[in-house]
Figure 1 (tube, rainbow, N blue to C red):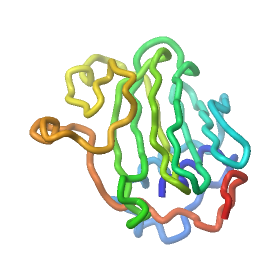
Figure 2 (spheres, one colour; figure 1 turned 30 degrees about the vertical axis):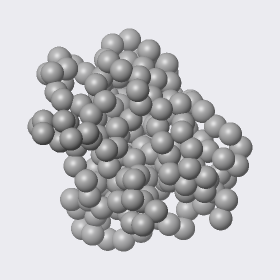
Figure 3 (cartoon, rainbow, N blue to C red; figure 1 turned 90 degrees about the vertical axis):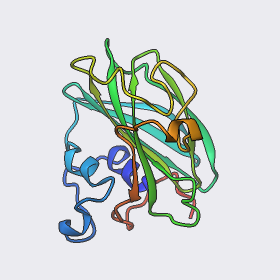
Figure 4 (tube, rainbow, N blue to C red; figure 1 turned 135 degrees about the horizontal axis):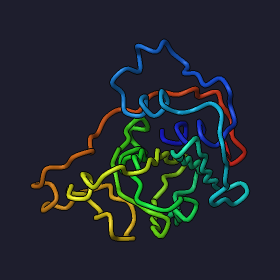
Length: 193
């Protein structure tokens, strides 16, 4: 689940690891996120949290931000403000539990969205789920013309299910797959099991 990906950001850890041999994760959505995740940080901000319910933390290394969210067993909408970002546009690579995660807990959806410091996003976080993001500065405008399930200039929230109209368009940056089975022995304060 994306809860586990979120824990890599939320929990301070100088030696990140996976619970299986690395080749088992190659090609799995979420593994690239783990590979690129720094182990030391320049800045940390708690973006939103409610004790025993959920936590959202953003951590910066150089000019790239990583955001992690972990949730208790109750599904909820989390309003995420990107006010912690600096000036300019950023590309947010997003990992979130798929709609069928109650049946297939390893199923995640990945996507991308252009954001800036004024962007807000409502994210539906599944029970015992979470989300993770890698947010890096956009160096040019080549991402601006792409088709997104939620256009970059809206605050409508995150996209999970495309409409029939969107399915007909080419979708760059979206794919479905199986999430890595990350260190399930880790515990978090907001877990309630």
